[in-house]
Length: 542
Ligand code: G16
Image (tube, rainbow, N blue to C red):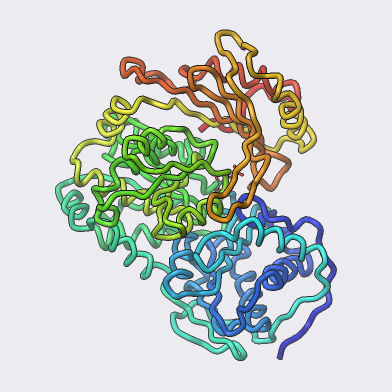
């Protein structure tokens, strides 16, 4: 039986950088989930009888929302739902399933690297038929609808068993429960030289992978250990838990510090990696060297031809604006296009669909390619392994040779988390008002060459996205960028991105914070961070 249930709108269902992210108790309010899912369906056209993919990262409230989503998909006329066994699908695996089985779209339930649990974070994101996050025109339509919604449709089908692989009927609709790993593992085998990586492991190559009790655990076990022959203690924390074991499943130098510390020891393994809550981010650390996400993008692009899936070269590279320009130098050398987009993987979709870019990346620990339409943590790890297997050099040697060839972009991000929203807005508003007066002014030895608020013109659909981050460019190529995060769930997070280019190999061995010291001081002076926020230092430095 299909019921139409009366509801009243919530005013705060605006999707951010990557879907709707809120605290669990917010999602647990009456009809909160139902309103949002119905607003998604109401913003779509012509999906009757078609397939919807549903999966999540296994965090607290995942199973409850999956049951609601299935019952609502049945009531709204979808013909089939494909769901990962146990409600599990990593974000890149969900993207692959949407593409492979030609689904109409998908609901990806995750708050990514944010913590999970009854008082922590949850999220819902809609992905379109190319497998990628809905573009802004769709998310804007969803938000508009959520403010006007007065009813939703739900089918009385009881609890669907999502723990057994196979097909069951839910009213008129079929629910297909699939192994969440198999299709993804097959895709990885088609892109990378598994034989070469197997040989490398067999000859004693040592790796440590931290799944952070998040969704990549089962994927890492299957691919790294079962298929590539890595020893069976290579993947750590590989059982996904609803609260990620009480930690932030965020693979950065703060929340994966234990991995960093292990990799800096004399007896460290050859390669260390981690992934986040929903499996789309990556952390790469070689024996004695952390590879910044921006450098990793550049290195992967420069070496991608060593993997079978990219042997014909790249069509182009895309990076988000705050990501360092290291990849630009690789694109220049390869004679291919480089695209600078706003923060948010959704902006890469058009470039990938149009064949303008093959590899994309962001400073926020995301790299991926045209194999799916999401960033992909294990993909990045496997491409690194493929490169290491072919080049037979250490991560450190590969990185330092890259710097010697292209120069080094010293890079760091300083985050001020949970700042009062008005205070964070004041930083950005005041900067914006002063943009035209900054060029030509000096801070110590640094002279401002240009300053703007980044705007993006999509070369494919010609849409415009404004106010995407304030850039202060200095003479000589250094810069600082300021923007407010679109993924936080508490107050505002001010992000400050700091970058300096150094061509001289003799100066490539500096400590990053030291190398950026004058820019860090300048950033505070220009933006008045301490004055506005009362904070004397960032919450997180990556
Ligand atoms: C999401 C987006 C990324 C973005 C990141 C940080 O990642 O998909 O494109 O770079 O958030 O965004 P912000 O700086 O606005 O917080 P994820 O891994 O959280 O889905």
